[in-house]
Figure (cartoon, helix red, strand yellow):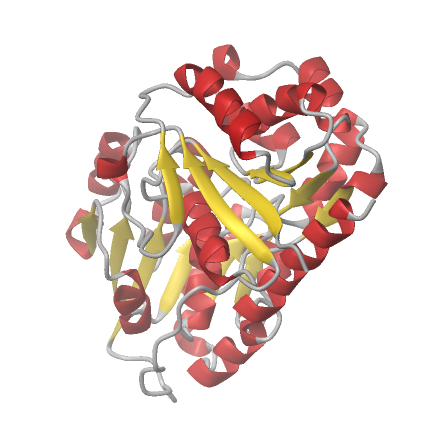
Length: 359
């Protein structure tokens, strides 16, 4: 059987959820069925993911626009059967190329709930809905990271349901579970991982934590972003700055998660929160808001964490934690282990690609 030629397109291989998932998929697709190549608009020196044994071409361009013609030439020369993109601006390019390369199938992966995320985006950088609607409707398929994204694309852009498929992100790494806990420690350790930006809701986390008076806690924030100074100023204003440790970047995310008692998420919107999935896979329960996106597809309230509807609910959950029976790490992990296993998710992608190619 002739192998199906698949081209993955990324703006860069810098640290990021999409980059991690795509490099993982490329490494784990069935090599007897698929011939995988990756085209990266950016520079090899920026790559933080292991790309050994992968066929990767770097265009060495500092802007996506500058990669427009090199990518066109690359597709024309390589003649892939299917091209897959996973960042909004790349997806737009592929929507244009889809009108040019009639014998190539194009699939993209949408990672955000547009209607909600637009409230936190720079309006000058937003792509007009009429353009998205036109180009997305001409694609062969759109992978939605969560069911909310699927509903949003259908409602906001009028994308035909036959083009939409929900495929969640996979668990890409597992560590041995730390000791299962039967009671909370003297100092409860909280952690949040994510970009320090408005939509991630760090400020409402701090406000909730500031109301905790009946037990001791520490809080680790991993991430960087434009709101860093505002977050630190608020923590200082609330009198909890001494309880917080800020870490801009680390390669030991799973270690930090394993050592923590609870992951806290304050997001107003999520696509599919990789950090929440990683936390559960490490056996660490999650306290989060029931926001638009994939959080509620991971968190089972009372089983592997808690979902708060309002900021009052969130604060009360934090305040009452020491009165709630602790979570068994093995139980928390079990809730996600099968549902989001790498084998399951990879198979879903492989089946989608094959189904599009035979149409």
